Image (cartoon, rainbow, N blue to C red; front, side):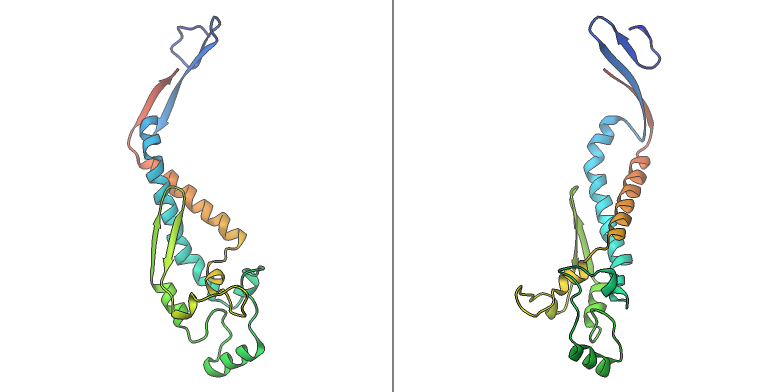
Amino acid sequence: MGANSSHGPSMSMGNLMASAKVKTRGGTIKQLVTRRKPIQKRALIEAGEFWHENMLPNHFDASAHFRYRGPDTYRPRSKKYNKRKRALFGHSIPLVFSGDLKRVVLQEQRVSGTSKRATVNLKGTRYLFPFKKNTRDHDKAAELTALHPQEGIKLGKVVRASRERQFNAIKGTKTERIA
């Protein structure tokens, strides 16, 4: 193609200079670049909300200790503890003794974020936080926030879909020449 061609890429053999026309959906490239961080922030916050609504409840079902097992999560409870829990409350649901922790963390949350990460702040009962390493205590916070690899993939899809939706919501289709 010649240097004066107005359709598609062009190349000048003298300086090997290239240029192209780029057609963007959802506004100009400048608009997309300036809105990237707020869009990413919103996408991560949506992923945090999705985790709270759809994944956190899985930590309280009967198969949770198999799904989330790992070196620092879901350590087995003693036979004495399980026997006492079944006698007092008639169940063997993981992370649930009386049900206070489950009730509180599933109801109340606040999700905040930046363009790099989102934080889900959960309200908890008094026995959720005093974990000390090198004791027999269970790290209940780590048990609550354990993430299965498939859940990580799903959260990635939530972020990607949110970003696409937000970018597509920016009005206009523009054609710009990039030198």
